[in-house]
Amino acid sequence: MGMKSEMRKAFFKEEKWMILLFVFCSITGYVLSVIFNGGPATYSGPIGLWLGFCLHEASNYKRFKKKWKTRRQCSVFKSL
Image 1 (cartoon, rainbow, N blue to C red):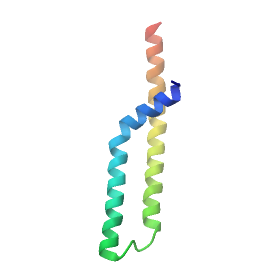
Image 2: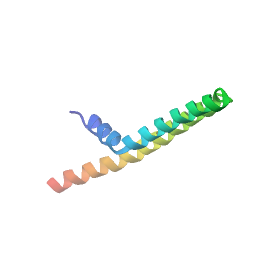
Image 3: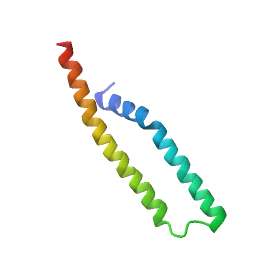
């Protein structure tokens, strides 16, 4: 298994509940807007919400990647 796939698995394991909660709340919000208003007033709101979440997760992934690499390097130095 490659180093990148291990890193991605570790990231998704760490962020799994945040992603699932976001998807659940987004779907619930959309369904409620359809029930109460006949649909969202504009589609820029849900699109902006998804885009913002993707940018947030991208920054979390970048931070996680740096942390994971330093943790990996520390374990290499400890084994020497």
